[in-house]
Image 1 (cartoon, rainbow, N blue to C red):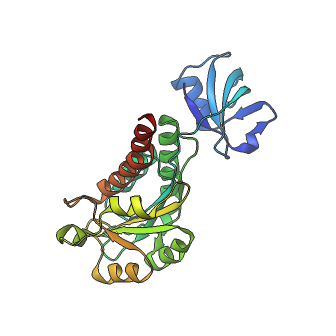
Image 2: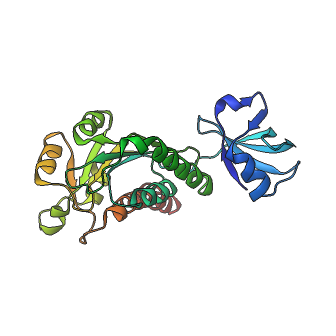
Image 3: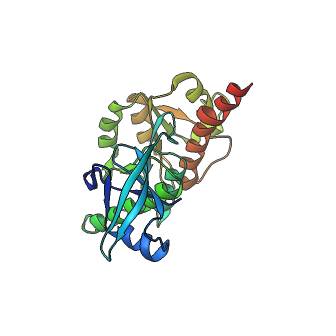
Length: 257
């Protein structure tokens, strides 16, 4: 069943007012009719089974039949801080990272970031980014849409990091030494359900030595993501899949034994 994220202001009692691009999707793409059911999520990560009661060219009206007791969110809130990559790689990270359960994303300008986002085009770019995470949240039946911060410097990122329980950065030099800190060891020993995790991933060239030392000084743990060197667009997905396995699949299997 198709899911839509509707601002809480468009829920009035047991009625839901749907507008914008979602109207086109409901009428033209899904070809829904009056009487069909959809799922509507509000801004508080609550989902409701709704029945369409009226359709217009610019609006769809639905009525809440029941609120659903469901949650598919990761047990930990994972924020991916991504060094700005080249091309459309950040869009891939947003889409797949949302499907894998990321809570939010922070793009940052790293020393080795080849791409530099034009401030004049940022509003249009952010609109595109938010559309990607919204659609990915609907497709994967998330209860919330991940937030995307504006691009920031690494110094601003460090200031932002004070709000997190655990802070890591993927450092390729850790994959080259025998005395390394594995990502798995950190999440098993340092991360608990309901905590927040910030994972910093460098751009194509990785972190500079200066950045790595700065992050270490500010309480970030350098970790390796397996014995192989991953592409920047792969690293975030490795992190989220590993966390899902540890906190969802592995513990689910343990409960059944």
